[in-house]
Figure 1: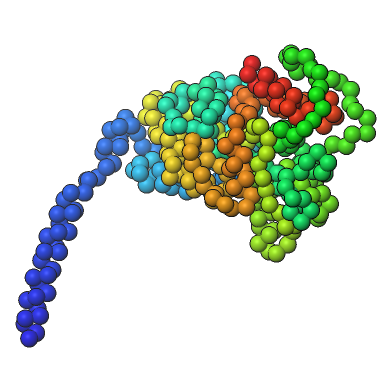
Figure 2: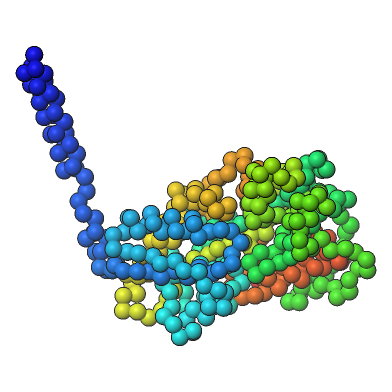
Length: 374
């Protein structure tokens, strides 16, 4: 009996071993030589500088994307390092060796000098593909939406409701986002001349009109002092964490308006700096950019609370807060110029005039569109 069982086991094992040998023979061999041939034999470390302080917590997502890229490219390593805005602005003139790539927000660099063309990109959200004239490409973005207390309001705030927003930072413009969220509401018609280079904004303020800009806008909302907040992903992340502890208001979020301000972009630029092996380096940098824009990588942006930039991809489903940000990003995007400070200056000037009552939200949107189209 035992002999029969042993024979049966051998008869079963032999075909299995032959099958495994066949599978192994059909698998591709060592891909290292093919990769080295494609990229001029280049292997080594590519250095990536990331602008410190961008609103979304992007480093975890970025490091996971880097790990996946390195596994597919034997002998290639990407070293990501946070640097402050001043160091990144001077990435070719500081006396230190420039990085191979940079990740930066709009308005940080004066121009595309020392950046190489990024090449052909996958389909991005409308307006994003050409926003840097081909010298950088967005890899993730933030958004804005109304967050409101549903025990106080039945929907997003109207003109009679009190709402607040945080002040502007170097990377986000909540006051301008507040104005765009307000487009579509009924408002008094304001006679305005066509915008000139100075935007044609009145200099006088309307006496007694309170500004919704609040240094502690988030705190005012969570304490119940105001029923609504113009929020970005940072506030949604904090509110979600607060709700998980059983504290904070009973809140929800909604996207409103005719357009969404898309100033919270993080763009990748490939540095064009003389090196003996520049062709191989830049080819791999372009491959890494495409890896970041791959649908599989973009689909993991929910891990850092950011929004995908490729067209047609949704990552949040019905998740409270983030779904509203994603819905807002499906509106026409108002994208400030990537290079130069004029975009930030226009956002500040127009939103201040709106808060002073010198123009309505729709007129403010028209002003910004005109300023950004120059």
